[in-house]
Length: 339
Image (cartoon, rainbow, N blue to C red):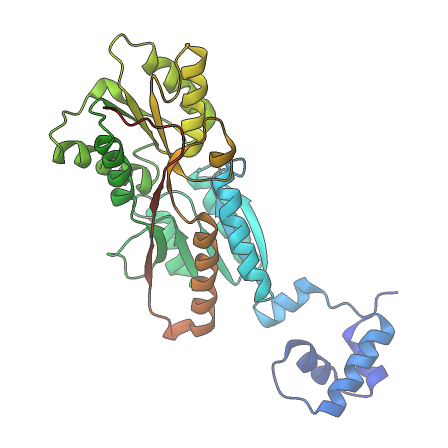
C-alpha cells in the first residue's frame, strides 16, 4: 500500500499542510510538532513523490548539465567538478549529451524545463551563433551559466572560461621561443565553438608578431578527438614540405597526431614536436608525455556550479558575471628545443 501525506498527517495528528511545511521547509513549524511528523514519516516509511513535490514547489533540486561529447575526457573531468560542488549543496545533476547538435540541445532544454529544473550549466555550441538558446533562457527565466565561453557583450548570460586567444598565443610562442619557425595547427571547428576560433586567432597572431608567414597548407580544421588528430597527422606528415612542430587544439588531437607520426616512421619530438592543449590526465601518462597548455578543467566545473548556485540563490538580485581562469604551459617530452 502506498503511504500518502494524508496518512502521515493522520498518524502525527496534524494537518496535511503542516506535514508539507515540515517536508519543504516552506514555513516555520515548532520543534515538538516537527519531531512528531518526522517520527511518523520514519515509522510509516513514507517517501515523498519527487514529481508531485516538484509540481507543488516549482523546484526539483536538479541541475541540468549539457555537454557535447561524453566520450571526451575533457568533458568528463569538467562534469566531475560540477557534480562535486552540486552534491555539497544537495543538488543532483542530470547529464545530457548533445553531440553539439542545436536541435538536440533545445530538445534537452525543453525536457529539463518540464521537470522544473532549477538551473542549467551548458558547455556546448556558442550562444552568439545559436540565438535560439539565448531566446530560450530569456523566455523561460531559467538560471544558466555558459562554461568554456566568454561573452562580455551579452547582458543576460553568465559565463566562465580561460582566455582561449591568449592561451593558444602563448602555446605557439612557446614553440617559437624553442626555435621553431615552421609550425602547423590542428584546429577545432571554427564555426562551432567560440574557443576554437579564438585559439586559431591566437595562433595566427603569434606567428605574425614574430615575423612568421602563415602557411595555409599547414592549417587543418577538424574535431577534438584522437581520430581527427590521427587523420590530420597522416595528411600533414606525408607532405614533402613538413613543419617542425604542430600546435593541437586538444590533447586528444595531439595523441592522434603522435600515433600518425609514429606510423609514418617519425619520432616525437626528434623529428616533429607536438603541443597539446587542456592537460587531461592521460597527457602526463602518455609516451612521450605531452607538453601542453593546461586549463583548470575540474576547477572550471566547480566554479561553473558555484556561479549557478549563487544565481539561483540571489534570483532577481543576481548580476551577470564573467570569469576568466588562468592557463599555463606544462613542459614535458613531446616538444624539442631546436638549436
